[in-house]
Image (tube, rainbow, N blue to C red):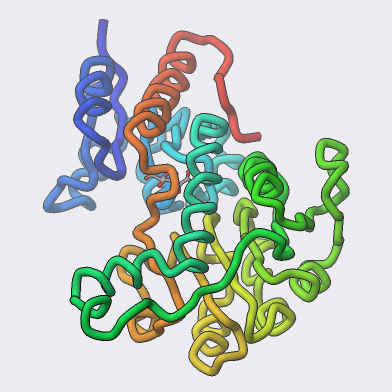
Length: 315
Ligand code: 8YV
């Protein structure tokens, strides 16, 4: 039986690559010297696109594949997939929710503790001999007992809330509506009002056109000079210029970021800011979770080509 032709937008770990190539005829866009030529020769045969959350699939790529049936995303976020053209063309889209939720929430906690308690600075303090020469690391900020806001109480936001509550923090959240599954946490409809009552603001929203720059100057300034922002969602949810400006001028205390506009090339101004913790989009980056994501990506493709229901369709 002929294996369906698929277009692979970005690389996967070896443990995913081998089974993918077993089941499909894989055309690797990322490995091609001439992606435009690859699209024009293989495009007409492509029936599926396998991509990653941050890479998605744009209109040009989708248009180059007239026989495309499905896009399978390795990641929960599918904001980089042009959904409009998928709707127009009847192309199905799947993602990998649930399997990564707890790792992303864990990583959010690691960023909170790491930044508040100076873990990276402390490590450098020891390695560079400051401990011996200059004495103890300057004192840091307590986490427990602080007021924390979660912007977006979806799967990841909810798991974050459970962890934050277990750390004896006062948890509040904003979302489109109050969530009955979070009766112990304070609902605050407006993001600015949430920021105003919070010492720490977690951004855990899935990114859409409506949430673009939802964390703008007003939210940032409502958090204030002692406030902290932690982003484990997508960079587009924050106005990066406003964030950098507030961090540089002390109108915002600190930020921990796992996602950036134009990543992996990030705004160089971040590199000069001492009050920001920078991470290379690694919140879901454990072996266990990435294996589960790869399996789910393939299971969705297999289900589609076998005529079965998709496991995790996005809409
Ligand atoms: C991954 C992500 O880092 O789930 C998402 O939306 O962005 C991340 O889990 C990414 O998709 C892996 O390439």
